[in-house]
Structures are given as C-alpha cells and as structure tokens.
Image 1 (tube, protein in one colour):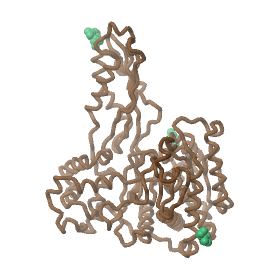
Image 2 (cartoon, rainbow, N blue to C red; image 1 turned 60 degrees about the horizontal axis):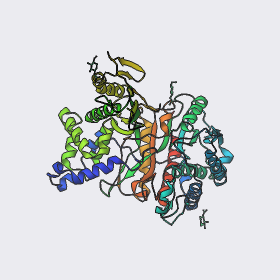
Image 3 (tube, rainbow, N blue to C red; image 1 turned 45 degrees about the vertical axis):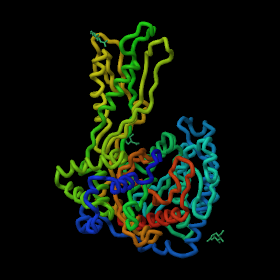
Image 4 (cartoon, protein in one colour; image 1 turned 90 degrees about the horizontal axis):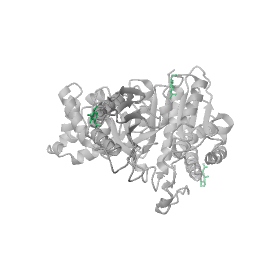
Length: 561
Ligand SMILES: *[C@@H]1O[C@H](CO)[C@@H](O)[C@H](O)[C@H]1NC(C)=O
Ligand SMILES: *[C@@H]1O[C@H](CO)[C@@H](O)[C@H](O)[C@H]1NC(C)=O
Ligand SMILES: *[C@@H]1O[C@H](CO)[C@@H](O)[C@H](O)[C@H]1NC(C)=O
C-alpha cells in the first residue's frame, strides 16, 4: 500500500493514550473502569455480528490433509514469488515498451506452475500486458460477482540497505517462523493467499454458484495508472457499472493493543482524499545588486508561513467513520479509562461532549488527529539558479490528505482564501486551479495555485455499514479468529478510515461495498513494510488463506444479489 498503515494507527494511538494521557489518568483505573461496558449499550454504538461459517459448504474447510496442503503451498508459493523482484518505480514507461516490466512475465510463469488448477479452470486475461484478471464463473449468472484484489509489484529495495537485512530481500527465506523478503507483507502475501485459497477449493472439487473475479495490478506502489487504472476500465466495460457485490483489497488488519484479551479488527471502509498543490510565484528577474524588498523566494516563504499558521480545523462528525472507530474502541476496549468511555458515550447525543471528545482525539497522537482533519505538508521547494540573479519562478508543493467530511473543492477554496491577501500585498495576479481570481492593479508578477501532478482524489465514498456485505465480512473475520491462535479472545470489528490510498481508488464505480482488509495482526509483521527486514509470520498467512477460503464460501451461499 502507498502508506504503510497496515498496523492500525488508531489502535496504537489509543493504547498510547491510555498509557500517557495525564488528565484521564488522574482518575485511577479502578476495577470497575476496566470492565466491559454493558453489552447492550456497546451493541448500540458499535454493532457486532455473530461469527459466520458456511453451512452448505463446510466440508471444504475440513480435513488435516487439506490443512497441510494449504500450509505447504502458502509457504512454497510465497517464497518463490518473493524471489522474483517485481519492483515498480515512480517514473516508468508503458508496459510492453519499458523493459523493467518484463519481470512480471517471469512472475506469471511461476504462478502458472504453482497454481495449475486455477490456470486450467479460470479464464485469465492480461490487461495492459501484465495486469492479471482471473474470472471464476459461477453457476448462477444472475448473482453479482465478488472481486478479490492485490498487487504484484513491490517497492524497490534501497541498495545501501542490503546489508541491514537479516536475510536478503529477495531470498524468500523461511526460517520456520518468518518468511523473509520484499513483498512478503506488501503485497505478495495477499496475492498468494488469494490464489492458494482458490486453488485449494478447486482441487477439492468446489464449483461456485457466484462468480468470483481476481485482479492483480502492477503499479500500486507508484501511480496505479498502468495497473488498477486500466483494470478498472476493463472491469467496468466487461461487467458493467455497479456490477460487483463487494470488493476485498489489501488493507489494515488487527491488533491486541487494548489488552491481550481483545482483538480489535479495523477493516478500512473509507479513505482520505489527496491533493498536491503547487504554489508558484513568478516575478521579474534582474541583477541581485538592485533587489526589491522581497524576492520571489521571500514571497514564497511568507506564503508557506501563512499556510503553516493556518492548519486545517479538526472536525469530529457523528456521521463519520472516525467517530464510529472511537465508539468501537471506547465501548469495548478493556483498557480504556472509564472517563474516556463515558465522554464517548455522551458524545452520541450531547454536542458539548462531542466537542470535548474531538479535543481529546486531537491530543491522542498525530495519526489520530490526521483521521479527523485535512493534513498539509510542504514537501518540495524549488527556486533560484544563481547567486547574482533574482529568482524569477519559484515553487513549493504542499501535500494534502483530505478529511472524509471535506472535499477537493473545499480544500482548493480554503488554500486560495488563505493566500489571496498575500497576492494583494505583493501585487501579484492570482490564478487558482485554472481560474483567474484577481489581477493586481500594478502587477509585479503572479501567484499560481495548481494541482501539481494531476492526481487529485476526492475522499472515498464510505462503505455502507448497515448493509449485509459489511456484516458478512465481520462474521467471517469473527469465525476465522475464533479458530485461530487467538481463539477464546473477545473480537471487536470496527470500521476505519484509511489515511493512505490503495488500488481501490480506481474501483469506486464497480460497487459501494469496498473493504480494505488483510487478515493479519500487527504481531505478524516482523518489521514494517517498505523498509528493511520485511517478513511475515507464516502461521498467520496460513490463517489468512483460511479466512479467504471462508470469505469465498460465505459469499457463495449468501442470500444476496
Ligand atoms: C507438506 O510438505 C512436507 C515436507 O515437504 C511433505 O512431507 C508433505 O507430504 C507435504 N504435505 C502435503 C499435503 O502436500
Ligand atoms: C503595489 O502597487 C502599488 C501601486 O499600485 C504600490 O504603491 C506598492 O508599492 C506596490 N507594492 C509592492 C509590494 O510592490
Ligand atoms: C467513474 O465514472 C465516472 C462517470 O462515468 C467517470 O468520470 C470516472 O472517471 C469513473 N471513475 C473511475 C475511478 O474510473
């Protein structure tokens, strides 16, 4: 994923909060405060469904031989896939022309050997040369297909860090616990898990009633343009608009940070928006020996100071995803102080409590604050070519992640409003997002605001939570955790807002029911993703395959369109 938030930032933040917040801890943690709140009340603010197992197809989940086959196949196939370095880079050409894509052909050949039943039974289409789309026809064509996704590409390994890896990044080494290498977590683990689940069902003779489609892109780690962007067009023209019952992509997983007895699961049901704004100042050049009071660089500096002095407000809305996450965490978390629990409970109907809760959330951590605000980060700056020449054109790029409750338009209007007084002050003609705003009476240059790279993205439409697909996912997660290493623990499934974006950004036209979830715990990653020592706990990945198998079977017998 583009942003390594597989480990739920929310959970970490709340756990840290519980440990560190001085105000809330003035109230001691009495035995009363660590009790679960009343189940009926908790169920109101954070509804939980029962574990869900397939009934018709249960036989496909049983059998020790099959369990051993899944384990062997998962480890062998992931190890082999990691050894094929399908790196994607920020600047790449077109598949079929840029030779750096050819390695994806090697991966495809490997998958053909590892998953023979899939290659015999499913209809496989390559889109834009190297994207894989696999169609598994169900017997009832009136049912909407379910889409399972992942991506084949990995972020490159920084050559200087090769020596820091405990096992080489493209070794695919399995040490008996961890499977090592770039892509083991992000995202070949998901791709191999999906393929192993389907292959396992096929070799047992399972024939689906519902159609399932698998789609694996090639550039999620860069733009997604040659990958998911092209797959989306293919899927929409092949299956139609709003034609899928649900989509499952990579995403956040679960954690036990609230206490060892509770597993807190956070599938992302929403994603923040995205906009890189270029702030460009153009002024007349000239010799540095006769300078104006403010050069273009000086003016740009004033603009940057103005932006950082005006951070975007934090807003906690009852209708938003972050509010739901807070309700789930505070309603069930054994370690949550009762004062915070009560504040969250009152915030359901009391506006003062809601405002106080928003303040408490902002104090939690930068990650939590980011969930309820649009963020801005001045990440690039350029200007000036020579010490005796006045700079003529200088610019900065400000990265924004747009809050769920906001929009591209609101962000554009706000940044324009913050900077417009400076255009007036320095006599600059202002153009914002292709629209002329003001022209200075005696213009001494221009201020131009624009979408820097043309990859603006609105916040994702939130997935409906009062609908069956969410309940099916929740029930499948609960059933899977119930028979895993975590059996016996309380499981709470909470919706979450993702701070970064996955390939699903291209798939909004296919369904409203989009889930970004990988059935792995934070304890199942040896280190982070996109860094050294990426490794996944093999046992956990086997549980991911079992979860996916159950997800397919549950969908196959669900009484849903
Ligand atoms: C799993 O692998 C082990 C070790 O290679 C092998 O002995 C066993 O037969 C395999 N089991 C299955 C079901 O493929
Ligand atoms: C802007 O223009 C006005 C005249 O229209 C002038 O008096 C003022 O000095 C100019 N300011 C700057 C910063 O150039
Ligand atoms: C969804 O459909 C709209 C309208 O046809 C189109 O403009 C948009 O580009 C599509 N979105 C994606 C992500 O393909």
